[in-house]
Image (cartoon, rainbow over all chains, first blue to last red; front, top):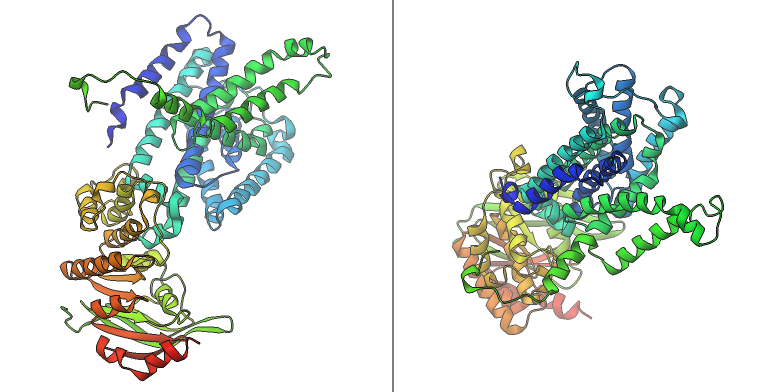
Length: 343
Length: 253
């Protein structure tokens, strides 16, 4: 095992996240937003295993998210209330689907890999969107809350606060898994594949097997996050499976800092909060521009777009990369001799 | 050198056609354990194609390749490497945006106990000593933390060899290891390769254009011309073979 468990910075961040709900500005609404922010942090981080470490761009992560969400929704709808059984179902469903997709997608490289993941995901979207047994375009609505412990009263689970801690626990677990993975023997091979996959083969590595394995791991993490998704809004809708969601997750990885794990978590959280905050100011923005609300729809989206474009243009290594670069550039006092060598 | 005469690599009647082009025609080759065997010939003679057939990049159109009596014809590059054959590339082929050390580490760890086991997902064997020893041998240890793409051309050629040696091969295929080197660097590289080969009891199959390298390092030499083997023998025999002189001087027109 590597030093990941002893990195004080990570435990400090999780410590802050753990006490975050205690602050007065964390209303129930904001806790819900934080839930989404951390959930998409997990998803962006799992995509970073592919994009940042292996050099594979998946354009189909919405399918892993959506399949996880539908697994939970379909089970809860049929009276299976245990969140653990829902997670197990999501692991099986998403795992099998990911094996299928990666088996075919890893036969191709670059844009063709991305397109194959996209095509598979679009098939899944279409299936759920037009299958009336699964609610068609409405999806599955009005779910009863899932339960952490069998027999526990529903109210004991279904609070924004408990949901928040559930997804925070997932984030911590997913981070430790991803960090351990990228520091391992396996992770070093992934980076070699990203750098030069032909050369990796001539060093005796079965590149395709490595690619399939990392695809399935990434998909499972996203699928598990997806399985938790319905517990907040008590629904699962086909929108989750749409290709735009896959595109947004790619944007999260890019703006957060590709190939850093922590960066995409920041990117995911930033993206969700930005979207929510700018949208909440939308009426004021329309007012300032002299537009009526119905004619001004979309103007606030333009603002989000401009902010994202500026980040990509001026922070090519993402938010985390920019912070790290600023820290290196910042003038520092000469370190005392006694502290030399300690980082 | 310390050739004991046992056949390590046997290429039997290997042909490789690309459409109408016969890149290799019924080539026979036997590389014995412990020797340095060189493959020479004008551009387009099929030398690199033969390497690619041996190492599994292309299956041959006909014929067989055997290594230690095992048939390896048509195996994938990774499977051929696991049998004990490593290759360096004519055009430098490294992992550019990771450090020199990380380059060699990924090669060396391919032979660690974790390889291919579930434990490789959460563990990494400490291969630092072996990796650094390789870098030291090739005089690039002090560049270990540099990105591989920042090395000079000559240093990258050495890193290329380190990657191949990291997989602990019995047979090392070198495709023009001194390509692009100055005469001084070439001399140095030749001595180094010869020394490393004898220290590690390696068998070497070498493609080389530079005749001073070939004549200085080889136990035996084979000459390819338009995909056919036209001569084989000691460096002295090859130097005076009329067919070889014809191929190099007459055929070059």
